[in-house]
Length: 207
Image (cartoon, rainbow, N blue to C red):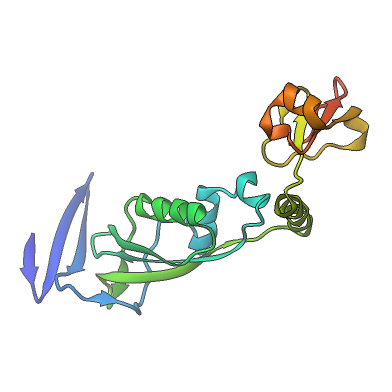
C-alpha cells in the first residue's frame, strides 16, 4: 500500500495481469459522483433488485402492504456497505427485511470521482406494488378483519395461509360450518365460521 497525493494506491496481481486501483484516503462521503456504486448482478435498477431478493409474499399482500420504502446507505471507497437506514417505511417487518438485505448485500464496486474510488451515499426507493386484483382482495379481507367476521378457510383438509387462486373447475365441494360445531372441529380460529373447500383430484389449485 502506497500513500500518494492523498490517495491510497492498491496493486492487485490477478494471474498475469496487474491492476491498480486508486482510493480516496479522506473521510468525505460524496452525495454526487461521476460513477455510482454498483452491485454485481443488480443491474441499473437496484431498488427492483432489492425487492426481488427480499420477496413480496402473500403475508404482505393480504394485508394490503404497498408503497415505497426509502433506504439510505453508504458504500465506502473499499466497497463496504455501512450506515444503512430506513428513511421512510411502509410496514415494519418488511422495512427490516429490506434493511437486512442491503446490509448483507456483499461487496460493491465503489463510486468514483475523477476515476478515484470514493465513499458514496446512496438513497433510493424500493417499490412494492399490488395488482388491482390483489388490492381488491386485500380490502375484502381487511373489511372482514375490521368487522371481526373473518372466517377460517380450509382447503383439502389444510388451513389456507396466504393467497390461493382456486378456479371453479377445480372445486369439488364447498361447505360452511358455523357456531359451536365449527369451534369444536377447528378451535378458536373458527369462531367466525369455517369455509371448507375440496378440490378435484388431478386438477390441483393454482398457488
